[in-house]
Every structure is written in structure tokens, then in C-alpha cells.
Image (cartoon, rainbow, N blue to C red; front, side, top):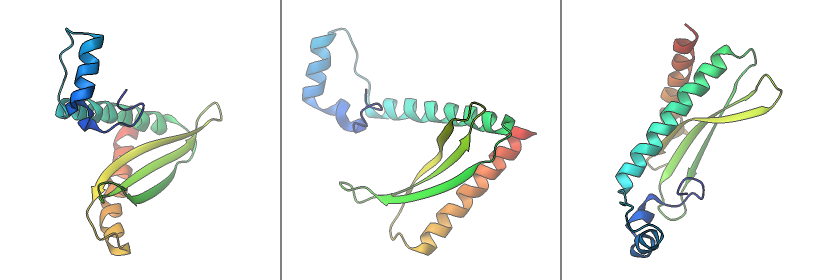
Amino acid sequence: MIILHEYPLSMVDHTGFRRFVSALQPLFKMVTRNTIRKDIVDAYKEERKKALEYMAGSKSRVAITTDMWTSDNQRRGYMAITAHFIDDSWTLRNIIMRFIYVPAPHTSYAYLVWWTPMLLFFVCACEAVSL
């Protein structure tokens, strides 16, 4: 539910949410936001690994795009690298390969400093999967 609706992880700390969950299932033990974060990161890593393996076996080319933005409520900067490719059934696929926090300022130099290692990581990961 948290991922599906893009709720903040802190939602599990809200008293109203805890009461709601308890009313639905009194025996349910609420997990912490750190546990949820770990589960999300683990799922992301597994899905990224599957995507790299799939792309290594695919004959299509991969286009890589990046995006940087600042969150409205936290004033924190983020960057994502997305791989775009057409799968064997001619369906356009978009997979976020990397997502990181980027400290301010968001200048072209900061972009270069953060983007270059991420691109190298992606290239090395693809090479490793295809070996």
C-alpha cells in the first residue's frame, strides 16, 4: 500500500494509521519505517538484477536517460537513471536502474559529478551480467 500509493514511510508512525491497522487486525504487529525501507530496497535490488539479466539477453538497444529534481516538501535533490528498451514482444519497457539523493546545489558540475559514477556502474553491471 505504501509503495502503490507513494505514501511516506513515516506513515507507519502516525497514530491514526496505527489505530486503523489495529482496528482491522488487532494481532498485526506494526513494523518500523526502517524495516519498510529495507524491504523496499531489497525488492528494488532484486528487480534491478532481474532487469539487468533480461537486458543482457535481449537483442534490442538500451537508451539511458537521467532526471534530477527537488522534492517540494523536503527541498532535497534526487537523481534517477532509467533504462528504456523494447522487449521481444515489442513493448516499450522503462526501468529505474538507480535512484540517489543528490545534495545541493544542483549545478551542471554537480550533475556531472553524480551522473558519471552512476553511468559507469550501469555499464559495469551490464558487462558483468553478459559474461
